[in-house]
Amino acid sequence: MNLKKVLVWLAIAFVVFYVIQQPESSAEMVKSAGEALGDAASSIADFVTSLG
Image 1 (cartoon, rainbow, N blue to C red):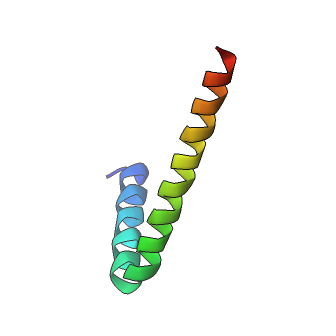
Image 2 (cartoon, helix red, strand yellow):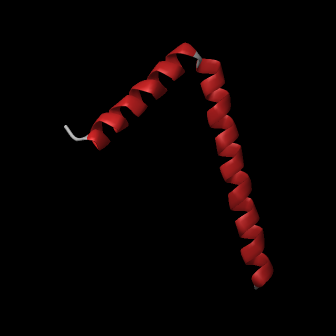
């Protein structure tokens, strides 16, 4: 196996471990990330709307 595959699997294992150990914190982090992406999309939409 090459180093990249090993690192990817280690990262996946860490995420799974974190979700199992801290499910509420994990859910809050995903919720916050979703809100940030939604805000960014809304801002981009406002910008594009203001161009036309």
